[in-house]
View 1 (cartoon, helix red, strand yellow):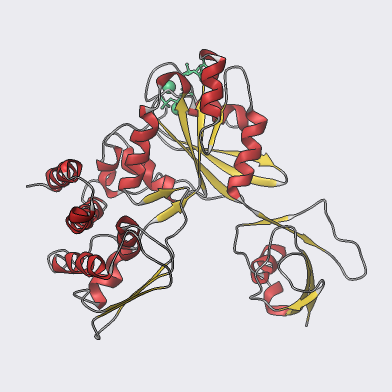
View 2: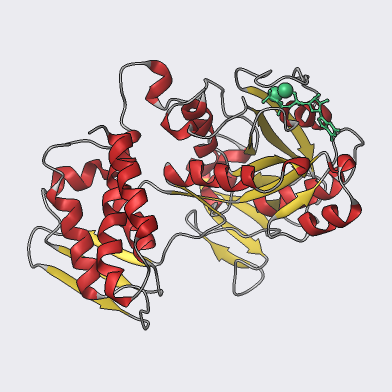
Length: 386
Ligand SMILES: Nc1nc2c(ncn2[C@@H]2O[C@H](COP(=O)(O)OP(=O)(O)OP(=O)(O)O)[C@@H](O)[C@H]2O)c(=O)[nH]1
Ligand SMILES: [K+]
Ligand SMILES: [Mg+2]
């Protein structure tokens, strides 16, 4: 049986198994199996299209946004509208066949926007250019899932499933579980909260299910390489739940190559639907309604995009002078003083003595900090050289 058939067998079994206390172990095992086979789908194979390599587009600017959607939902129209790049738009499907980058300039940041070919059901398994598109999506900071407001809700669910099946988790944070495979000592299981979806027994079953099949496939995907090499079986590991996670979330942690991605659902072509329908879509979580054709609500979409990118703006200040609020240094979340130095000048970090920081990242304002100090949005920094 091929992997796809195995996957569909398991999916069918999960669908026909009723979810209750008596079946939770069985379901947990099925899900562990499913995750394993899906991981195999990501394995490199011979043909370039199946390799899961993205289109060759250089990362540039302060952040990257990927446009994902079915054909003809208006992705290229959107790119042409928001950037100075023109991407061909037409009323037939698969107009766009490659990745076309443009730049949105907003609040002093350069945001790289990627127009991509439309994807369809089965994309994750290599249909169309699905794998390449999804590989690009994995490299983005935010995904815009563009939907045709006239087409109902099926597109959204199908696309979510495609992305989900290759380990992209939309608008979810990384499960708060500590997991470390060990050389010996069995499985030590602990939790700091009451667990309602997982138990020690289920966790053990899932770990054993993973380990049993690894011998045959030394490499499934990048994230699990270390696991397969360092421990031929996961009969020894330290597991600590700090959150009431589901079996699926636990599986995500042991598989380890998941991408946790903010996603904005953008319903385009609202010029074609009723006000009531527009109102209903606009109220859905993480959703924005627009019309590229009539240029409706695009400013609001930019505001939302900015919020989802959650970039960190840092202002610099010279000794004895006011901060320069006109020219922010824009960094990704989790940037340190060292990142700020690199942005100002290549050699600055090597001449760095200390920095003074004003803002929410410090206890006192100003506070003297070192290179590893983590910056927060709208901090002001003054760097003192040796
Ligand atoms: N009514 C209406 N039509 C739109 C809107 N935005 C785009 N279109 C039309 O939708 C069609 C498809 O637009 P494209 O931008 O080519 O769509 P795409 O998603 O890039 O399509 P592919 O590259 O084929 O995947 C074109 O005929 C556009 O003119 C809109 O807001 N309203
Ligand atoms: K099109
Ligand atoms: Mg297009």
